Structure formats: structure tokens, C-alpha cells
Image 1 (cartoon, rainbow, N blue to C red):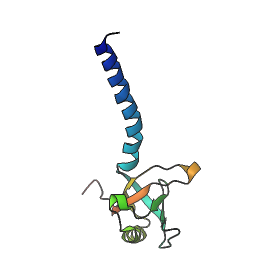
Image 2: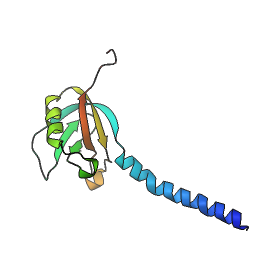
Image 3: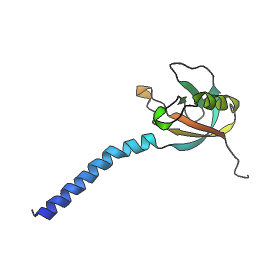
Length: 116
């Protein structure tokens, strides 16, 4: 094999490995938004984590220093005020039942109807 072909193969393999490693990081750390209805939210904090139950799935609400999120109490208060209403929840992370991992809520806003 020529040196050029060998370099191209190594580059392609390197890019492939980097993609395999970085894709899970991207999907964990980049936030997205879901529309759902809050079914339960309490101002009880266990192990520095609040829980929010929705029709979609349960979420945790905790401070995250690496995201500069230090307002979990305010977010939880918003969840309590919006209980029973349709909301847009901005969240990040993964939900893995096996490891008791929950997606973390970044922001909760009352959903605006499409007519508005």
C-alpha cells in the first residue's frame, strides 16, 4: 500500500473513532425540549435532587455547576405552579431505568397554544 492510501485509511478510522466517542457526549450534554403535562411536583429535596413527574416520563431537577444551573429551587417552584398544565420542558441527559438515571430539567415554561 502506498503512504497516501495508508494515511487516508488512518484518517478515516480516526474520524470514525472520534465520531463514535463524541456522539454520546453530544446527545447527553445538548439540551432539547419536550411538550408534556406535569402530573406531580413537590418541594421535597432528597439527596439534593427534586423530582418532577410528567405524562411523558419522570425528570430530576438538580443544580449543575458545569452548566451554570444554580436555580433548581426556582425551576421546581415553576413546576409546582404549572402542575396539571401543558408545559415545554427543556432538559438534557439520558433516562436509564437500570441505573436510576433521569434527564435533568433546565427550564419549564407554560406551553403556548398553536393558535397564539
